[in-house]
Length: 172
Image 1 (spheres, one colour):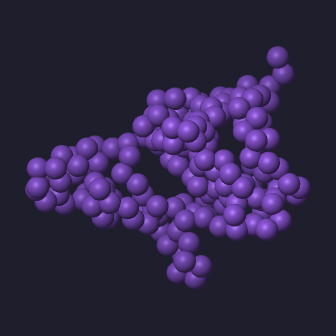
Image 2 (image 1 turned 90 degrees about the vertical axis):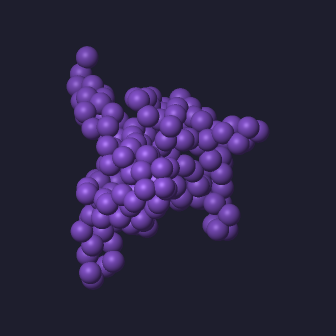
Image 3 (image 1 turned 135 degrees about the vertical axis):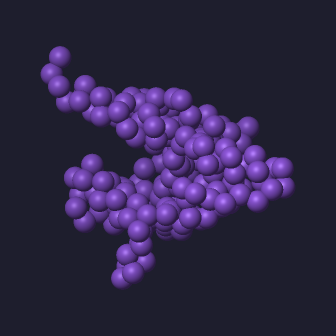
């Protein structure tokens, strides 16, 4: 986070900045996640980790997942653009209602104002923000929805998530 602050300040002053933590300039830039790349598959370690964790959480070892992890210059949030295929047709309205009622989730899906999940809104929040919920126009079966999810990885992706999972599993 400090490198992002310093490189952004240098960029805005018109000065060069030599990255020390990340392999490429971070400010005002996007690049492939800097985890080790598998030369055979072309996937990096972060991508294979996300696939493995998602399959484990969903209890579906062969769950088909396509993913590309990109570094984006924000301080405290991860974002995911998802397309999810269901066994049956699920409308965007049904998904919105289910997600709005889900614990630890905040629905941010205001088409009229073009207001959807943003890293700046997720930073410092315990909830995961979800929005841009719509049918996947590439799926003629109508069983897929596309959406965007953002969460503070220092909160939800770390200790808080573990505590919330333990609370859900432990009898009261």
